[in-house]
Length: 283
Ligand code: 13P
Ligand code: ZN
Ligand code: NA
Image 1 (cartoon, rainbow, N blue to C red):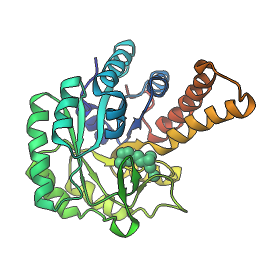
Image 2 (image 1 turned 90 degrees about the horizontal axis):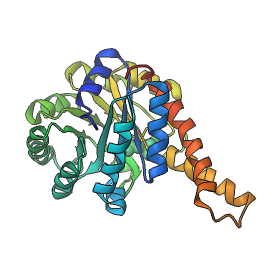
Image 3 (image 1 turned 120 degrees about the vertical axis):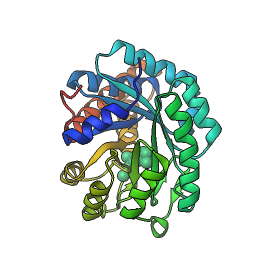
Image 4 (image 1 turned 60 degrees about the vertical axis):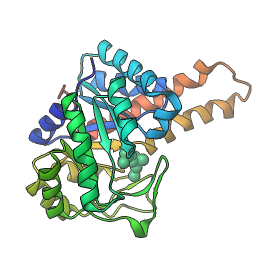
């Protein structure tokens, strides 16, 4: 069965490694990341954005993820990414999601606390992991667009207060990464991560995983980031493999002929990210 991500992320925080959380949009993408985690004996978080939940249906996604978890021998959690819609959070929990993100980072601190607390209450009753965001992660993720000038780094003292007030299981503090591929390099505030980690015992979540240079990911992990979200790079690898098939064979019409190479490309990228995060053999 799917498991809550709380225990796997607490183990990661204690062990100084990070669990990869991959955004998937199709059955083949889901299978590819699970096969990579299985092969490397790594815990895994499968996640879907609100847009994908609406596109496929939470029940279909949960059924596929549950089947994957039942066939696999590594712990797998299913997470709802960046959601500010309370009824949809409840719907996903009922469908079988084992982790949810309430993203009220666009609201003032007190309102973020209020909404997060409400989700923590229901999620905890169902043994479901919770994640919330402080500050504002820049870039584009699904329907959420945060312009560079509106991105905001998390305040360490507020992080401490926020976790104490809400009881949230995991915290995503904005520390300079952004959703999507960077123009140039990200401007990560490592000192801020260190300060937040010294004040907050809960596992910390690194958003905007695509495009961060490997050395910088390793530094974030060493400083206490225990979950890394990766979305854009996966979509690119998957789509590029499909485009390559059609470039060579424009007449191709058997979905397996383009889905198999796409799945293979995603498997390899997911395996690279799992190795980078240091979670090999941590299952
Ligand atoms: P990227 O698209 O930069 O990988 O960000 C993923 C993310 O943070 C999903 O919540
Ligand atoms: Zn994110
Ligand atoms: Na990114």
